[in-house]
Image (cartoon, rainbow, N blue to C red; front, side, top):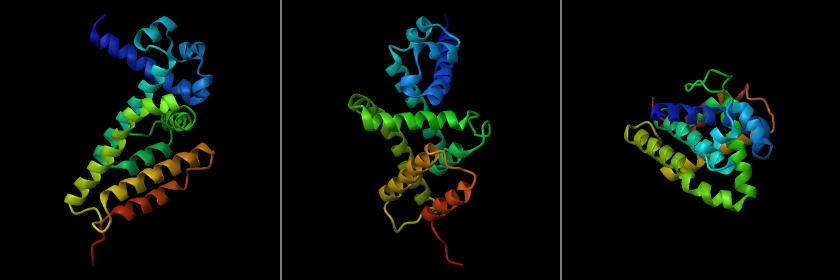
Length: 194
């Protein structure tokens, strides 16, 4: 098999697994359900991933990389906007609910699974680094307030993201969140005098 074919197969597995984990959670994403969601046999799935945990970690890492790309270009608030966007309307074209499902499952497993927490710690700093770097670039360009340390602004944005994820996890509506995210963006911007 060519590398392109292997890469396409890996993407097929990750995309199917994303929807399966989002729908059923980690425990409910049985091998049979993963086979149905990906359209592949367990042998094909586990040829690319050692086990279900490795598949989930790869999926979560893939989502972090996608979020990191959005953060680098448009900021962490754009990631939040994509979480509340209607299906098919995100820049990446994926369903935000599936992205959210992975994020919720990561949060749950971080609270309940020490082994997962240790493995995830190696991967999780990418989003923080991308956010901090974007904020530094914005400060250098004169667009970011300069009365608050960038590390504080980074933590602020990450807390807002976690709050939004919790809001969505509770099934609360997201229709009215765009103006809230406008306020979040305005909070970190530099205010220029008239």
